[in-house]
Image (cartoon, rainbow, N blue to C red; front, side, top):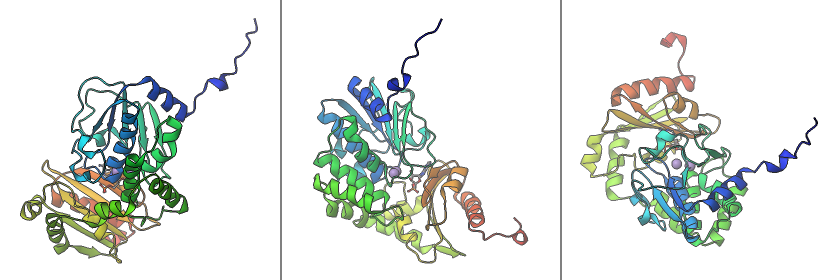
Length: 333
Ligand code: AMP
Ligand code: MN
Ligand code: MN
């Protein structure tokens, strides 16, 4: 017997429609982003979270390392270090894999929605909105929030603008084009304060952070296009710098003219080393970071690698020289 086939095509929802439907059906939200958050992690978390709250939703915005660093952004004081109770929808922003979220989602199951721009993203959500051509997760949110029924008001605009300014290091990365600037102009029209964000995110530093930079700059090395340095636990103690990151020293290293690739090694407490790579247009460090268990973009990537500082430095410098084509057979490779 012949059965009339139904026009199935009409039943397929676009990603935006799937997200909008899940938003409408959910009341309790949990939004998380990555450990050692950057401005795109915090800005995306807050830009989306505040818009959902304005709709009367209950929203837990969670960063394992807290949001203290982003006190200049509206809503940062509401960022939690761990979620509580049951939720209807879990969203992860600006993370390429679930490990990057830290322990905050333990016991909460698979995220319902992942919004991200890392080309190394593992599509670990039920719905994955991954757009590697975008300069920041905040730019993806700017594009899609209206289609999800969410309004971008002055507070959300401020947060999303911070995400774009942070990930482009103040419009310095080669992926910045007129479209990116048009988005930023629209965010400024909506109430984003570019000068404030630029200064807070990229210019102003604490006295302790700059003293900490001093330790790293003192042991800076340059070898055949590779510029690198390390920061130790003792450096942080000496400088009185309380976070376990590089205080953005990597941006200073990547501004060194001789650096084809810049690397910074940050010693951690648990026998791991946080490694950050930065490179010039034409080279791609995301593969090498991925090979060491991390991820990122062509121009900026990172990994948390197990081992002592000396051992991790030796392995990473060796592999990075290979990427630069510096090692030949005669050199024993
Ligand atoms: P960072 O070097 O930490 O500033 O990060 C540079 C880029 O690489 C960012 O887009 C990060 O999200 C990404 N990244 C850094 N560390 C990791 C990691 N352990 N796993 C995956 N992605 C990472
Ligand atoms: Mn990030
Ligand atoms: Mn990002």
